[in-house]
Image (tube, rainbow, N blue to C red):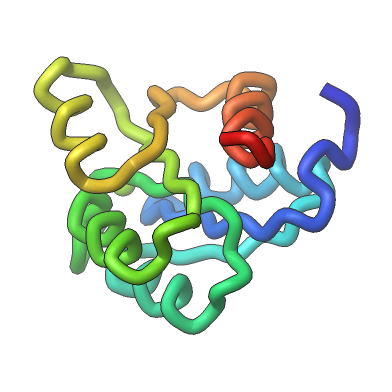
Length: 129
Ligand SMILES: [Mg+2]
């Protein structure tokens, strides 16, 4: 992946753990994307509602106030084109079904690796997807 791969794209990072959020910001800063941050599900829903220019959301599942499933489902009600990636600590088959039902386009397993994250976002934001 070359630098500035995601130039001009607007990404909302939803993560309650501050060090994890800073880590993801650090990874994505190199891509040229515009980054927004939320620390819980309700905050994410509010930001998504007030900013129709968001291209993609990287959503943690375990969040205070409102969990990632609920937040993604609410955002999906009005933002049909937005891409939403779940970030989750582990993978179970039941989880995957719940993720898709909640409106997620894809998921990434923690710990997150920079190359994998950028590649996943890049693929999801291709115009033909
Ligand atoms: Mg969390």
